[in-house]
Image 1 (cartoon, protein in one colour):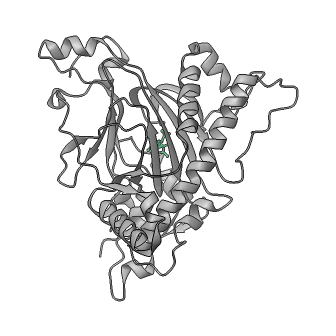
Image 2 (image 1 turned 180 degrees about the vertical axis):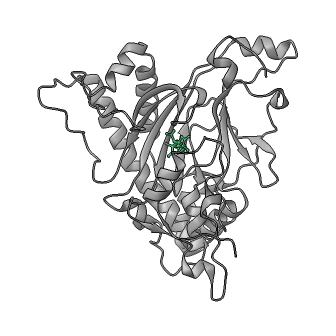
Length: 359
Ligand code: GA4
């Protein structure tokens, strides 16, 4: 282990084998503006999306139409939130705190503000975050408990995140339609239907990875100057759509297991295929393993929309993608079952193997 400091940080440091940053990724790009220009542009975009999902489970979206001004407002508001004192950030998440529009961080719920702790099974990262449920049904301002006086700045942050979610959810659905088209499916709405369902289990995550200037010194002295912000994992949902500031940190694993770093691009979105989409496509699309490393000089702020199905939805490979006489690689299960199983695992676990068919 590379020991940077006493205590928690020791457990967050990566083993020495990952001392240096991996090479830069050659990330496939899809221009949504081209997809909107006639049937040829659309067919080409659908093919590009499907090819990227098959090869990497990851690609960049340009020409998305989300106003740069909205992205900047969200980034600034997130930075302002994370700049609050630790006490204020924790208080913002407590239902008992007057003025909390986020007030539903109850014990056992993954939602709310947290620092360093990821999930329930001892994973740690050099990150602080907000995790919010954003089902279509709960979209819009949260109701504040009776007798509570809402704090104006937190309410407007929550409203801004709701506005952002609605815009990004719409763009996500354009991408999901292109995926279905690229797979040659008769039912173009097969994936969008799940994410637009009023009970869709979708989430918004706002991550802040504070810089660690001492890493520069360690790197200069030939030591392993790398700290994990968010350890390697796959996302359980159908799709994840990420936007970050211009700070690097995101890394993805290629098919052969080699890691590559994704050059940041604050004007674009990055799309991950999640476990549920790997199942629905019978393994044609690949749920991408990824992680985030901490930058020595600059804070990284990212906002991720996770599009998930309703808890009651039964997931299984879509018949058209299994084909007649083909083998279904996964058994049927409900999203509720998958989520419960995921929350019993460590971050890096292979969660899909419990749902694979054997014959
Ligand atoms: C990874 C994707 C999303 O960030 C998330 C994460 C969740 C959490 O942070 O609470 C999990 C993780 C994620 C996968 C396995 C479980 C659950 C932490 C963890 C160890 C919100 C999600 O849905 O799954």
